[in-house]
Image 1 (cartoon, helix red, strand yellow):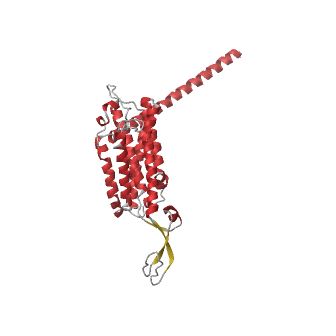
Image 2: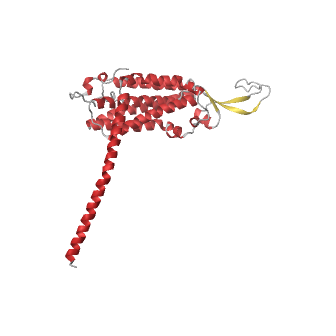
Image 3: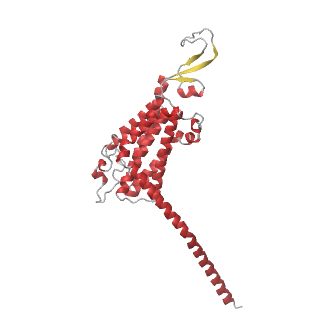
Length: 330
């Protein structure tokens, strides 16, 4: 056979294979496109619903009251929960994975959402950094609160070592009178709370629940920072899947923090330390988001969430319209 004919046949076979591959790819891409369209529609609907809820005036005015009610009446749930539940174990996966690094999760998720939203609107790195400084300020508040509370606890508390044997007759060792038939507590002066508990001794003194403080502060921060998406979508702002996914991750994290807060209050009630922790968390939110951040943006004030980002249909800057035109006062 002529070599030219062989070459022509080989070329035709290759072209046929390419055509079949292209047709198969098109046939397979059809269901994939339909699935992606369905998922994107679900993403848009769910995001719009949650953005409308978090950005509504009712939610923003009453969420801190709801959180205060949870902290105040949550310990009453201990009357109905079972002590054999998996959430009654302090070493549960949720406590170890999320609660012990709660601020890191909140900072990463909320910071990513704030940065993507602000940078996608204005393409200004300095403006994005200014909005991120709000989260950094809350982090500094959390770190300072922990350090101050630890200092006060070490100053006000005392470390005691339970005596292994029971002294008959109520012997007084100079550190306090004992009760006959009960073991004595030996005072260790100058011990810190962390080293005292690590040594297996007993610490007595007042304390503030840092877990409750952190969870309340993170819940309020998430509610404030994610509420900007509702007015942004209402003004017709474009939003892609990455922004919507980050928003839903923040909403999921907010739900998880509320759930863990209820678990702590129900399974590990500590009154009044948890009440004090919740009060300090709400106080920090009130001082920042209801006080300092409401001032005019400057080098010493990052401004309100969404400040300088939202544009009305008349192309009027959000900062010129004023904060309370979109978000009412609490």
